[in-house]
Amino acid sequence: MIVIRWAEGDTVSSSTDIKIIAELLMRENVCVWVDMENPQGAERDALVDLFHFHPLAIEDVFHTVQRPKIEEYEKSFFVVAHEVDYSCERGEDDQLLVNQISIFVQNSLLVTVHEKPSVAIHTLQTRCEHHTPVLRRGAAYLLYALLDTLVDRYFPIMDSISEEIDDLEDKIVEQPRRELLDTIFSLKRRLLKLRKLTGPTRDAVTVLTTRDFPVVTSESLPYFRDVGDHLIRINEMLDSYRELMSGALDAYLSNINNQLNLVMQRLTVVTVIFLPLTFVTGVFGMNFKVQPWEPAWDQGQIFWMVMAGMSIVGVMLFWWFHRKRLV
Image 1: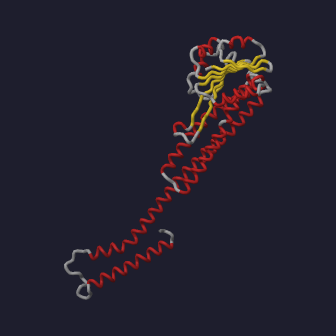
Image 2: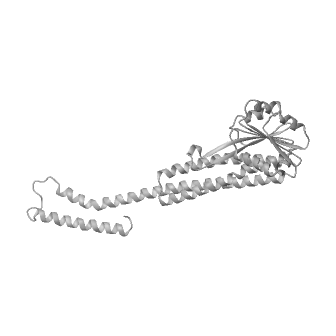
Image 3: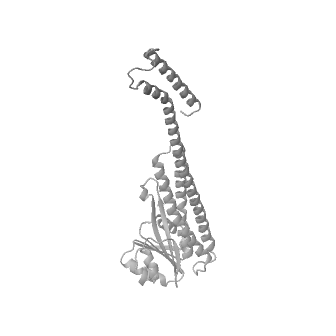
């Protein structure tokens, strides 16, 4: 599917007819934005035959495993960015969904290509329809608006992850369970995946602000620096969250060790309490035909005296352990 939008004067128009692009490119003072979603057939051919983009850049468009980057060619430059959709309610494999957005910038032309529907693209299209200066300010400003929309989508994700970490820390303190360990490692993997996206994106935006691109004018540089500042903040938040997860893992292991030590203490107390009783049963259970004390004492009296003494010792031991808060 292809959507073509262009601004000519104060008028913003749109079309889905690919044949109109050649005519628009020949006009002066016209800013054109071509968006392709899952391009097929003639739309793919247009990237080579109509726009004459570099073959290596076109190859990266259809291999959607590219890291965020910026590449400069003779008549245009190529940017790879990513749109991230996050939801903790989905399964672990689908909690973090990434959609590659390939962007070509050439004079007054911006071409975006993506395989899946994009919320950021739809948002920017709506802005162009209701706020015409977005498109009339040129391809560089349109590129900024798109990058800014993509980067701003990270902040709700950061808030959601922060709430997950707070909830996880409370559960670790209250009642550490085996399932929490899986949650910790799952969050660490998601944070690492986000860091692999935001870090190179920040580098690409830095290249835009430090190198001389004809399309990027001095008036548009402050806008790209603002996007870079947002990415720096996001990267710092991700680094702090990763440290929090390492601390949560240490706290979980520490609580598990404390619980194990508590169990061992209680087992030791039970062993000490029953040790005298075990001794009594062992002595009276010996297979002697005549007990040594039978001539002087009645066997039943001795048994109950010893049992009473051992019971008193057991109760005193239990009281002492309870006082020391060992049971």
